[in-house]
Image 1: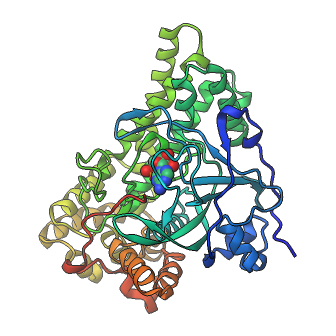
Image 2: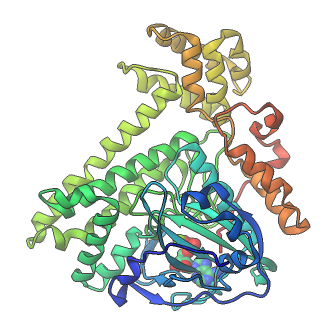
Image 3: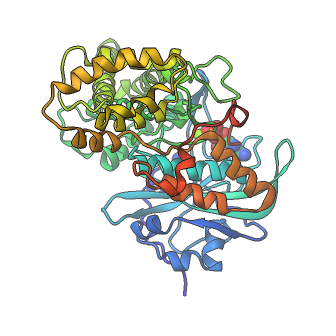
Length: 492
Ligand code: AMP
Ligand code: MG
């Protein structure tokens, strides 16, 4: 019995300049750590066969399934503002695409599966810690309802990878609606290959923005679509306290999914200037900078598309600028609507944004925990006595007391009752996020003690982030001062 993947590989059918054909490098002894069974089923794959020894060999890159056409995708990118004309999949290999149960095309990619022509000085491998981090955080994002790549499986390779020290090696199977990035467009644009840009744009329209094909100006509609999805995505990040950490253009997905979980983290105490990544010394990718950076990245995309807009460059630039001008409005609409629902508001009034901003400012000054503040506020909507549990999150509880008077007055102007409001608030204010200290503890247990029970338990809790789970209440707690994780490190 073989594992059957119903592959359909459209990217590998694009011109040869788009990728390098390369097979994964076999590893010594694949061991399946985790298979995402519901996701496997959604992709039309048989989870039992995938967890067989043959399945583990496939997921580790030791065996190539029938119908796969393994490639490393070419892309470029601005990394921390500096342009690198050739990056590409240096440690990832796209096995192929499948059509999922909803009829959507999904990439199946192995990450950490060995060197490719794009590896530069890297070894093409991934260590277990970053693989587990990506697995946990991407699945948590999916459960939170935020567009993201998914994790189908994690396998250990039985080999060591050399970082500062030898670490156990692993491969993540990543699922994405595609792995096309802003950097993919930049790759062709930087070579002056307008036909390449056009081929890519046509592929992307067919795959991600089919309505653009019928627009008067399809390439303009494509840019408009990417801008709208990125604006909404970044708003959603902010609304859950997520910091991506490496918002380079090669880590900005054209489909609008969160991609490339490296030194990402959710913040505990609210701080707009928060940075976790050890390599982000200037705070370029700080929490509150993320909308600005997304717009910067989209501007790089727009530059690539200019030759498709019109022959007159000045006119093309003007048109691109006008579309980029929609970003702020699009972002603000998503972000402000999100804030209103977080506060339990069903209607829109003047002063709502200020009300939300004042709470955030008070939280920042008082170092209040972002997730807990909103979660507990949901209960305070039901019962004013629960204000106690919110105010104690503030270093200066009096600022919450003052604010809550205004908030109660505002929600009192709406017809919805407390139970309806509490339920609505709890469906947008999660109890459980992948707190950094928990993620680190999971990685420590797995890497140092070969103990994957904490990993499994954390995944279980994070799969239902909006439900109170009394048995796992401790997972909602912020870190104690000695548990605080101050820095996260890149996935490499
Ligand atoms: P990232 O920071 O993970 O987005 O990666 C940036 C670039 O470095 C991409 O082109 C990756 O493929 C490449 N890269 C990262 N780690 C490795 C590695 N261990 N071996 C080869 N290439 C890598
Ligand atoms: Mg990347």
